[in-house]
Image (cartoon, rainbow, N blue to C red; front, side, top):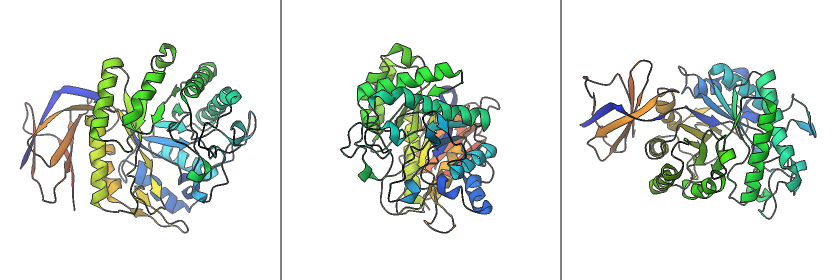
Length: 410
């Protein structure tokens, strides 16, 4: 038996929400039959029928149509500088509207690349040499392009866009051979793009903020923090610092958190993209437990206020999708990852405050979350052993917790 003692008076970060990206599936599945595409929406965003995600990452495509994989080609709204065709990207827009209607309250629009006309290679899939690809005289144009799209989504579509993320994993050598849109940035380019975007946001009058910097791993995140955050004017406008959990151990997270606490203790952290980088599909608890432990570490060691998954629906032979779909035809397979994620997203709602837990086990991990409105505490428990584990939650000053979420190896 494992006893978990909840100390609700010892509090940590306030959760902003859990989410997932629409990249590489919404532009396909949004065109499926009503029943099947609505089932995807229900599973991802409905808090009763599914896992109740409240955050959604809408991919502002750069219009790349030259990729071998049709699921990774994108449309761009832009037809000429400053001129847009809002009927484009219709399938992904259906998903975006349906996610809003299902309960998504916070949308991040993110770009892996500017449209081809703004790039050195003329493509949104990167520079063939893996070097920087955004033209030096296009930083302001790119920023305005993103703000124009945000304005349309907010004012014409009633989409709750809160953040614009202009740069994604700038450290990698993005090039067409990678098979997706992407842009490499060096330090000066990052600062120029962020300043251009902040100026465009300020001029727009829209209630928007920048989400940055989508660093690809915790181990190198401090490089970008030391680049961006000493700029006091820019740092004052950033609501969080976003990092991805790929190739990151607990020690990497602890080091970066220590750096941030020493230098920028008041800036929240987001984990804005992760999937298990492993070949082969897995529908069961092996990959679900890996994901659950990653979420646990990011929340308890990293102290993140938001945790966002990468590819929510996948056709690939990879441990990625929360839901699997075929490349052709319409069918869905739910994974244990989906429902393991739901033990957090469905029951730990925005505004919940993480609280201190003490437990006496080497195989059980747990985290607790207080609902300030009701005083209820939700405890999410991970059983990393192959054996059934009896859990006894105890709340300081009362008999037991009101709610216990438990998932284990099947």
